[in-house]
Length: 380
Image (tube, rainbow, N blue to C red):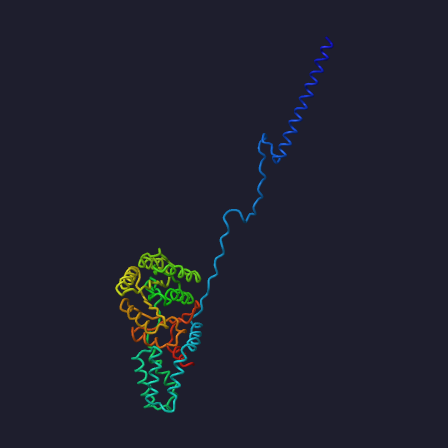
């Protein structure tokens, strides 16, 4: 009996020892498997992911707003006039020097007067104004004599009279009866019309006037983007519409915006297509009628490229028959030696040149001053 009890005790001990060995082996097997698998026990619950580092306080939430762009301060009219005279003297001095050389000859005969006529016509002054100027010069030099006044002084007086300083060249760009002034910019594509709208806005901003721009040239894809950029540079809003949309609706919205913001002036850039006069008349006429439901149009400025000469005169005639043009803007005047177009276009349309473009810079647009122009012609 005692022997049986001893055998049973030995058997129990053996079973316990064997079970311990099996358990230890299993654990070692799982450890080796875990090590091969990267240390993760597939039977154990997943380990919590490490906490993400806390972001600095300034990066939490919405990103900070970008800094407001620095607005440009356009150049004053006084500074523009100084550059106007300098640039015109370089580009237009050929005409004045040529006239002075011919009129200063010891003997002025018929051949000399023919040379003077040729020089004036070549400068695009036009046949009528040329004949008028030559006749007045001949009379003064014959009656008064060349010695009664310096030839330069006589020529200056006659050229100034030809340019006509009595014309009203002021721009109507002030609020009237609680409504903004409305300026329509017209002209064919390629004359610098859209650029002129942006430059005119800079002139008004330099005078501390508030402005809204209307991109009603909806048929030229780049026109709206170009005008918007001009406005952004000086803090001016631009109203745009869908590409190929109705220009009149864009013009209407621009004026409505100007009314709401109580600005001084709304400048509307119109389409410059010139396929036929009837289509142009319909389009510009509609724009003008729609705009005037809210505020009267105070200026219709026709933009002409001074370098096109007589082609510009043809354009001027067409537009003057379509809309009531109130003033001329001559662009690229510094790039042309044919400054006589100032006289020709004024005589053709009976309206003054009010602004002249002098170059490619953002402030290269200036009010036209007859005295400064004539002095530049003579190289003073």
